[in-house]
Image 1 (cartoon, one colour):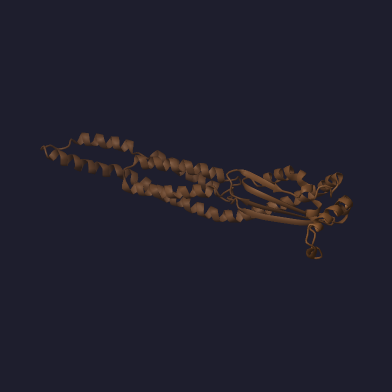
Image 2 (cartoon, rainbow, N blue to C red; image 1 turned 90 degrees about the horizontal axis):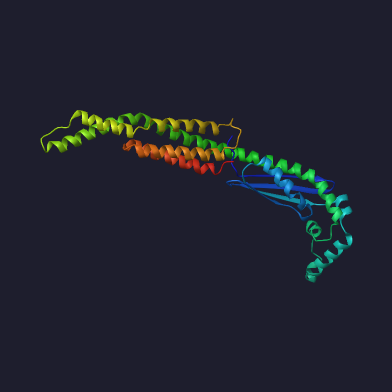
Length: 296
């Protein structure tokens, strides 16, 4: 299945009077790279969350934002009242007198002040928050994957269209290639007769056939056509909805191999029509390569 690397997902829950939320955003990246932002009191969970998201999202630049608002028994049991009062007094003292009566307090910011939460309290909060956040992270990842899949359907249709363009152009090359030798033979015969007519001679048929045979061997593209058709068959399998593995790197590799065969066909052939078809193929291959950078 083709999946885009662009996606967004979120999940939130209340537990024991606390509010948890997880947001995940992902964009294109050649490899997997995650950035996890956590409140200070939950910072020890960063590695666990990074590992968990890596198991669900195989490729892309991923931003994970965790929000936590303590409350209920958890907040009451773990807050150091004296430190909280001191921090709040200092914050209010820094405000102009006319603003103090209208000031509101961000509980999360207050709890982030060093000393407001006791060390043993932080450890208990981490243990309490771990299963909740891992569950929410999994839900958010599922929503990211759903969005990636929807966008991937559009990309897959585009890729299929590019594959059809290449296959049609390649079929024309396969039909045209055998006639290229005959056309070359006629051009060569006319050129040789024109030159030899000046001295009153004619071209020997055996010499002409020998030269045409050398040209035919040198310009034979049957092997390249066969290999490129094989790459197209594999390409069709990779973009199929039944293909379970991530497709981005495979598509990038196939695009490189298809471009190699197209370039070889172009270098071997001197036929104008074949050259035009090769240009069509190379244009479509370039588009496949561009899209492979957007696919997981």
